[in-house]
Image 1 (tube, rainbow over the protein chains, first blue to last red):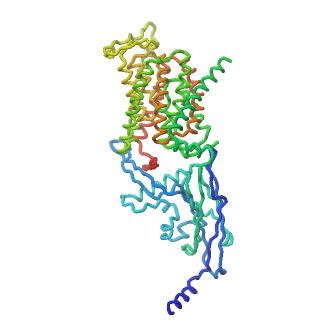
Image 2 (cartoon, helix red, strand yellow):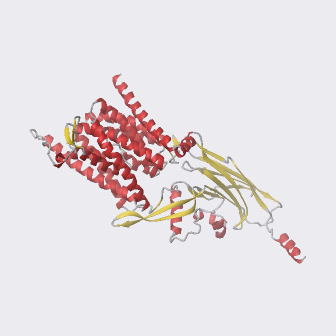
Length: 253
Length: 304
């Protein structure tokens, strides 16, 4: 009896802020990588659903959107100078590195969310690569290197302040998937943040797949490699012969 | 116009690939080299994964060599007998080379070995050819100077002698087979056709006339690189058909133009130009080893 009473009191007092939940949708949940694929834009839009009006003096609402590619294990090598030349000396396999990571926010990330949540929910470039149970020395510097190299390749990005939030209710952002992404299941995670704490979150999936000629060639290369190799050779020989013939005729004409 | 490559999994500009193919194909036609020693590093520089660059380049060399060799067949500048013997050695060497490659990969230093062999072989071959052709040009400037008489060296003492009519040689089959094996090994390790080593080896070691060297080199390169392409396609799945096609289209056209330019150039000019190009690439690769790289870390070609 007492326990129920306590529970009832807690329930009544905790939501100092109005209960808020996030509702999100995407312009597309499927990306086809065709031969002419040169990147695509995902339009993320959503709204905040409230059970009750906001109390007076509530702090500003912030939104963070994370799009992440499939997690993979990546071999990272480090060069050192040995006998006057630069050679790879250390190699570390770093697990849980997303093939793609892009984060968009309403404000500078470190101002809007506490570090614990940023780490636990992988919100931010510094937590994009998150090696699990790896004891290697300097694993951090190898994980950072992945983030740095992939930022240079345009695969990892953090764009603060590009999410438009209107009336603390509607928000939208354009997130660019570059031309060099790989196929797989991508996730879109959206977080509502108040007072540096996550108040609501949701996630959606985007399927990135090769399509058309791309998928036909890829499957052939992996399922019937000998046939694929012979076909490649045949194309080479026909092209070589064709060019030779065309030039011979041109010369005669 | 951007195009997404299905195996390399990157998007690149189509015209860059066509242009690269054309340029390298032209050099291939002029000098009788596959051009792999130029193309493979360039492909890696524009962001193609190294494993895909090496395998696909082999496929492209098949096309440009085939296109080039047809032109040489018409001028009867292919020593088929010599080519077949070199090829036998080459296939054996390539098989051995793939095994060496696998072993070095397992001990983790394959990248260094590839770069080092590039620097050493490009450096040696380049400087030898450069000095030789400079001397040749100087000799040609003096009237009345006679070309050196063919030396009668240890090669002529070996057994299994046979006549190579097109080359005008009567030598043992052992040296060509050994040259073929050596080039085959290097070709597999370095991911090239090996023409830049084969051409000077044929001139300086076998004493073949420059006229037939180019066609014969192209002839045997076709077989060795076709073999390499199939090995990569079936074992590593790294041949990118679209990348190959674009490079091939550029390459075969370039090779046709190159073959016609090659005929007009004098042998010494040809050699000094090739030497300069080889040395340039060698210097670039040597600097990569010596200078501190901008990024000390690199992401390995994964795919476990």
